[in-house]
Image (tube, rainbow, N blue to C red; front, side, top):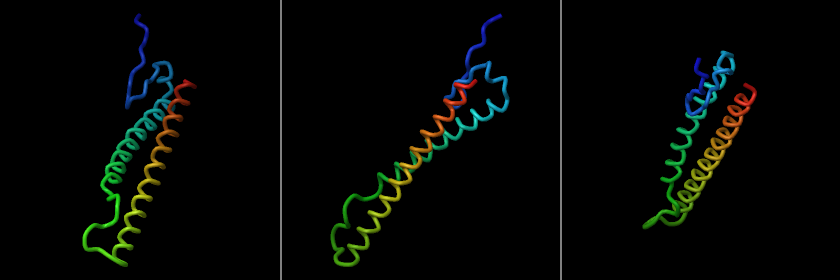
Length: 105
């Protein structure tokens, strides 16, 4: 009989021996799906962040309108940066959970 080989789902290697535990397999697959979803969200956030203008408005804007625009753009950029950091953190924690489940298989 051929030795069983690990399989891959959502980029996660699943050892056939640990695959016998349905709860562990379900948890690993759910975490792997979460990793894929987080990667997608991160890509969207990074694209949105790249579209936020860097400087203040050019041309005819002056005074309070220019200040309000600049403040809004800085606030939006900061909020996107915070969201990106949070998703990076979630990805790290999720990857750690996948690894932990794998090491206890």
